[in-house]
Image (cartoon, rainbow, N blue to C red; front, side):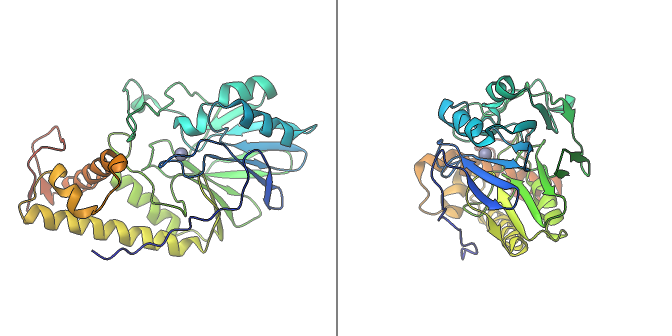
Length: 302
Ligand SMILES: [Zn+2]
């Protein structure tokens, strides 16, 4: 299968140093690099005097210091969460304590509660306890003094994922839904491939000019990237179907074929990604399997 994606893996930044990316938009990068977080989690500050912050990032004293230094004498009124994965929310409590800002996000709704989710890297990564002061739904506007953000519900990577359009600009804060450095991890049961693809299609219908993602540098011409991601997922789905038809009929057997030469550290994430595709194929009746689905379950294609 030909690789259809080219990634942007360069990024101009220094840990602890605010960088102005656009008028009223400043980025700080947290020092939590990994194969899943790239250089670290991006925290954005928006506004001029009364500020909003998108994603506090990890619980890290140096990052909190950098945020507070950047705010300076100004006032942080709102902390906005793209999704409740811990690399985005672990620093929330300390930031609320330091600033008294109100929190806003989709929140973990009743349907998502009560299940312990684990991350592709093996550690728990979901912050189940986040209950925002201001719960946001798709299309809702959050307005502060000198800025407004429009929420776009984009489930797939996480069920509670929101992107945020900065009103009066063509900027979209795309969280972990669309990033330039890599594809988004879609790992069941937390991640859902059908929802992710529908959320990508939604991005394709918008006319944003720049994405500021949760990890990595800004994305220009984002519609092109969204199209490439959709094509990439279609090709991967096709490759998985071919495997099943060829008798490589478990996720475990499929992974080394569709992810040739994969870094062993990412093997678990790749297996979950294949399972996410299989789930999506099963939803449409194209693949059959006895439930519960697992990496060793025999799959059949119709
Ligand atoms: Zn993330």
